[in-house]
Amino acid sequence: MTDHHIGMIVPSSNLTMETELPRMLRAREEAEPGDRFVFHAARARMQHVTPEQLRAMNAQAERAATELADARPDVVATACLVAIMAQGPGYHCTAEDSITAALRGEGSQAPVVSSAGALLAGISALGAKRVAIITPYMKPLTDAVVAYLTDAGVEVVDALSLEVPDNLAVARLDPADLREHWRKLDLSRADALVLSACVQMPSLASIQPVQDEVGIPVLSAATATTYRILQELGLPPIVPGAGQLLAEGRA
Image (cartoon, rainbow, N blue to C red; front, top):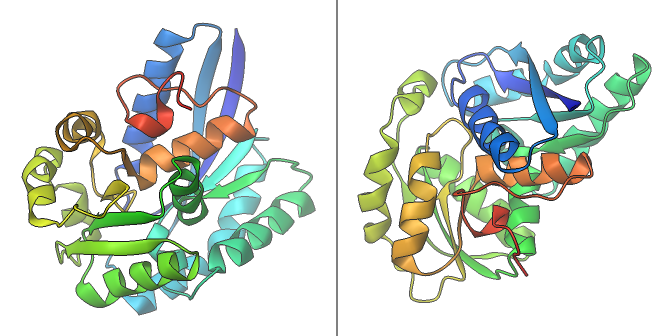
């Protein structure tokens, strides 16, 4: 049995990253015996999804990284996609470099992934050029996500904002509602559907059912982050029942 230690930098009000990622990797443990995943989290203060609180939270990332370094994680994942994307195109590279430098300063060699960079990687891995997205954000923040994806060469053909500013309220959203929300989108030109462009909005329970119905790959910020974590651990990115990105035998 090999233990893989996963460090997570999460907003203080995030309840979902610490449930959906472990749930996916527990499913992988059952399907692929021999690997065990252990989770360690550091928190950065954020209660409301506003530009001001997002910037303040980003400023705490290095402190959180130095705390995680003491646990000697094998990989570190930083959450809150919109906190990074709201800072402007390409900022995930800056954020990942900053956290990496903080870890190295404390003697940790762990690679760093961000949910923002992971979503781009997941879309690319699926070969998708055009996506539709659902976010819990207010429309201006959704527009920032759309601009970020567009700058990275991904066309957003449609977007739905649920407009929930309180981060704890986002965590309480019923993932089953996404099985109806997607019907409000025009998917006629979409190569893939991002069912939740936010690691706080629960979606895992609906990823596979929606994919089975819409007939195109369905992913989320959380499934994409899990994909990148497994890649950095040198493990096949396979999680049963979590959509095409994490499917066994995916081309």
